[in-house]
Image (cartoon, one colour):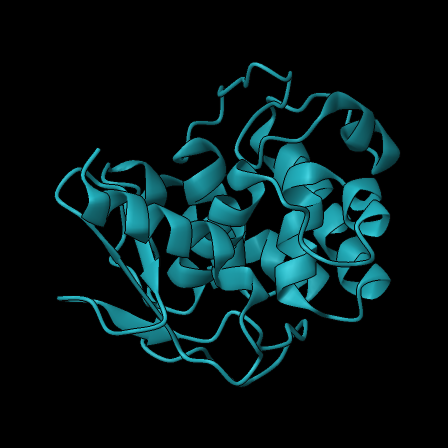
Length: 204
């Protein structure tokens, strides 16, 4: 790893501690790796990771887009994601960003930790929110979105904490003083989903 690559990885891992007024820039490098910086990078776009998330808000994030996950899978699930987003009064673009990062729109995805389906829902979480079959796309989307809405209430609409809790669990966020846990995977997850949602990155 070059010194420059190491520097960008350090920035990507620490941007979440930046003040709420700081401007953040993000892009993908030639290898598809997320690059986040407090200074403009070549081809990077600014986004606002600390902007509160409000379900059903009419204010659309700037330059937002539906991510395609680099495949033809996204359009297949667009109508179902829109349906679930409307049911829960959640911005469909946020669900697309989460599904893109979690499973790349693979309804049969299974993680090493046992998370399943489009939104990579843990079976215990699925059961908690009424899902019987997490490989059923509608049940999966409803359970994952219901959990997201629960996290929204728990963390006062703070999108950063919602995403951190979705990735690492609400207990991990609480144990770290209602801050993003110092886990590299979680911080990268928050950065990537936020950047996709706010349109700061091209669709992967």
